[in-house]
Structure formats: C-alpha cells, structure tokens
Image (tube, rainbow, N blue to C red; front, side, top):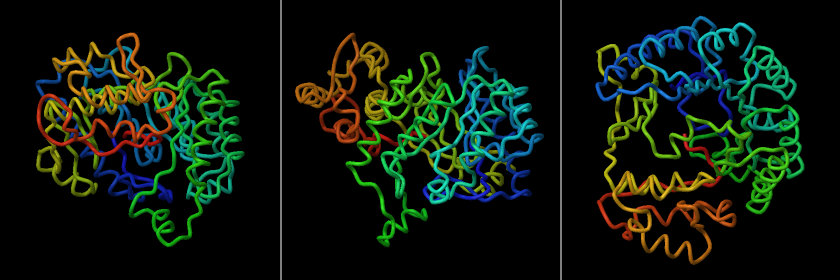
Length: 394
C-alpha cells in the first residue's frame, strides 16, 4: 500500500509523493478502503496474504487514528496468514509513542526506518528533515514499544560523501543492532533537484571507483557484524530476511493499493493513477483506478524471473524455474547462460544458478544478457528495463 504524502521531498526522490494535504489525506483514506474491498473481491484470491507492506511517501506521517483506520481496512478486506509479515515504513521525527502503540496493536511486526547517513551535514544536503540524534531517539522508542524486527535504510554515493563517512554510518548502524540493513546506491532521476544540479554541473559525486569501494565496504563491515547479504543491496540477521521483498525477487504475485501502486497479478502488471485526486475519483465511481496495464507473457515472465532471481544470493532455483515454465533456465537461455558461466559471471551448483562474487558489483552488465534477447527458446515479446546492482526494486 502506497501512502503518497511527505512533510518535504528529499532531493533524490522520484517516488510518487506529494506534500501533506490534510483534506486530500482524508479523501485518500476513503478511496483506499474502497480499493482494498474491490481487490479482495477477486475470486482468484484464494489464499491468505503472506505479507503486507505499507510504504510511501511517509506512512508514519498519518495521524494515529488514520493509521488505525488503514490497518483495520486491510484486516477487514483480506485474510492474513498467521505468520504474515506486516511492515510499515517510518521516518524519524514522525514516530511517537502513540503511533507506535497503534502500529503494534494493529498487527505490524516489522518497521523500516529511513536513516540514509549519520552525518547531519549529509542529511541536510540530501533534504532529509531529521538529524542523527532524531533517528537515535526514534530507534530507542521503537525498541521500547516492543518491535523486534527493524530495518534501517542507508544510501551511499551521496554528494560529498567520503568512504570514511560511509563506513562511520555502517558502524553506527551496527552498534544500534537492527535485524536488517538496506544499502542503496544513489540514483539520479530526471525531475529531481539532484538531477537538475547534476545537469548544471553543480553536483559533486564521489565517482565510480569510490562508489565501488563503498559497495565493498558495506559487505565487509556488515559481514563482520554477522549480517548476511541475501540480495545485492540487502543484509539481514539469519532468519530476518524481508518476506515481502523476496516476493518481488522471486517474481511472485502481489497486489498494489494507493496512488501509483503497481500490481503483478494473473499474468499482467498494472499501475494505479498517479495523482491522489484522480485515484480517488476513479474509486468514487466504483472502479479500480488502473491507468497502465502490461500483459506479462511467458517470455517476459522467464526474463523477469532470471533478472530478479539472480539478485538473490541464493540465485535461481533451476527446478523451480522448470516447474513454472516447463524449461530449465539453460534450455530457455542457452547462449547467455553458457557464455556467462564460461566467463565466470555465473556459478552453477546445488541445482541453482547465481551470480559469482565478481559479478555482484557489476550485476547490471551481467543481467542485461537476459533482457529482450533472441537467445530465448520460447514465447515472444519484449523484456524489462535494466537493473542497477545497487538500486531497490520497488
């Protein structure tokens, strides 16, 4: 579920977000309840949900009563598995004891906290509205409230960021003791303040060599602290991997609710209308607010399964792939897999195909071999866009 509101926009953000609008927020919540009811009425939805993820924007910007309403709407519309993972994204400075109590009582069992860096000068430079001290105070409140599954988001490659600052951020987060850490490389997206600064030649970035060193340092520091890199950008204590994000990387099915949310369901991908007012208007007429639909044929599904699955440290399960598509990965992509194995970019063992250690930092150039390739043995149609080794797949 996408909550589209923020107190202010970060300079790098290209998510579908808007400044907080009290009247629009009320309209959005009513529309969201109607959308959840429509989605849940699908007769193909026969199994309980294994995960719920509330992202944004800043979900924790909602008032306690609004958060309670949102969580109640989910449980009213859907059956959840007894051990379902329920995650809410939160920003420091928006998460007080009352909100934490509402989240806990509403069944939330995992929080994702946006930190990005521990240096206040870097936080100001990227447009964050909190300090390192704010984050630490929030983290202590989260633990006191009883949450024992916490993710912390970090970004490397920030303007003016040094390797030493990045390592300091990693070590400070390790000292806090979360169960999960996400380390994403900065991306420049058209329309963002950072992109305009970069086009004008005013944005001083660390450079490729420095970013590669930061990528490697995350693996070293977090690995030494007992975290396992289970996906290119994500680290977890054993057993604390994100259930929800694994659905994406395994190219599974998911339903999206809220303005701009994507679904992957019953052989197609679809996107909701972007603007909250247009989104709410469609639902006021009793129809789903979908404005983009893409049919996912067999070829596209095989490409996506390889590209997303190879992001995982465990790689692609050849047996699972064959049961899903009637072909092994090598039968579907004979030339690509043979070449990448011979060149040392892929490793095959234990019935799985995965990226080699050398391929992980340059995954984009490896995974492109599976995009819109003539190599594929069955189906027809185009492939997805490129994947960046350090970028989230949300």
